[in-house]
Length: 80
Image (cartoon, rainbow, N blue to C red; front, side, top):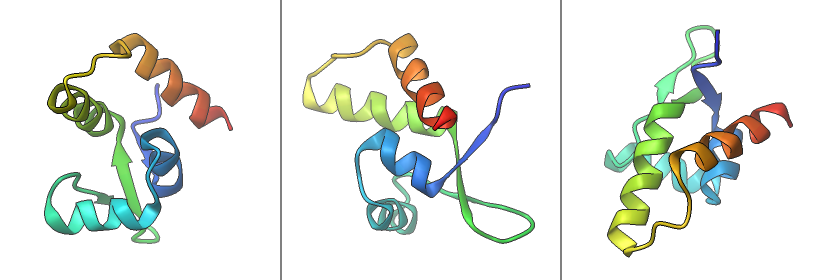
């Protein structure tokens, strides 16, 4: 079974933003974080990251990467 959630550090690497930016996005509703049930840390769904990447690319008029390329990037960061 694939890992459904990733940490704030992993998400910040994938999106190339700081963890503070992700916290602000959570506060403003752009990318809602879920909470880990044991430690209450922020965790993010991979599907939510894909949605944000798609919105960023669409709004910027750029389509540099395909969904498959984004998934490979996510897998690469999860292995680190």
